[in-house]
Image 1: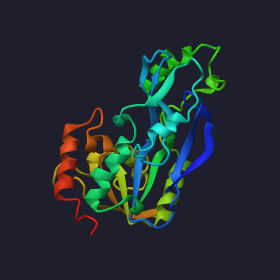
Image 2: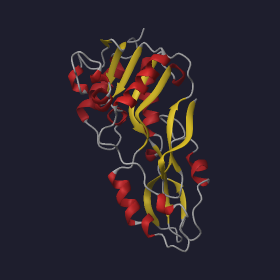
Image 3: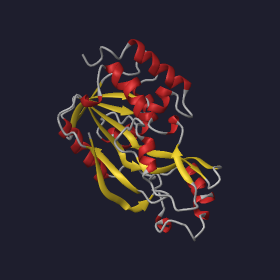
Image 4: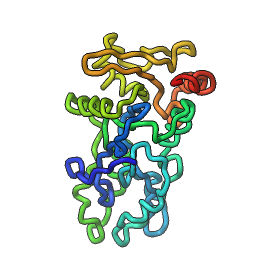
Amino acid sequence: MYKKENKAIDNPLFPFGQPIKTLTQEDRTPKKVFVLGVYASTVHAKWLDANGKVLINALAVASEPYIFWRGENAETIISKIPVPQGAGSLIPAGERFNGPSGRALDEYFLAPLKLERKDAWLCDLVPYSCRNDNQAKAIGKHYSKIDKNYQSPTRSKVKPKEKPEALVDNHRRQNILDEIKESKAEVLITLGDEPIKWFLSHFDAEKREKLADFGQDKETYGKLHRISHPDISIKVLPLVHPRQAAKLGLYSKEWNELHTDWVNHHAHGLLG
């Protein structure tokens, strides 16, 4: 369903040598909605040393196989990653580390709107996975210390992409705009603040830059808004990030409650 490009981003690699890949929508048929997220996720593995001791509980080791991956086949993906002899082994990290945003998208966004994956064109501001601070610390503490006698020949190239300070430039913004037009979707669903700040605000006459600007109470959250601009005219449905909807990691109780109310009382008839 989703195209996985073989070209690496500036040739950086995950620990153990998998390339960081871009992800784009493969099914280019017209869709009902266009979903804009933040950045691609990753496949996470638990890294055990040669004695079975946990070195890293959840290490990003590969690009997710498709946009908003649901976490299936994690074991198969990880089993194909070569680990140098003596460097231990990789097994799937806990379920909460693989595919939580994809599962949340289905359960808390598409299903309430009476939609399936086939109805949605999926896109991220940043179409590849980014390293967070915790991953950087874990790589520095453990992976960088792999003995040279059995290190991977690609070890020196391990440098996962950091989350860019500016998530979108004009070129990427135009690419997203082109995808929206190609999708023929009548509704653009934005997930969280970042898609509004880095994409939508550039076409919004009211220059709203965050989710709260569209409303943050039960009467105003989860409503359709019309964006009219020479480059794009479309209905917009600003919603929370999947983290808020599914209580993933650090989340806002206020936004979770608003979205839960929307799911229970407002979503089902919203798109007709």
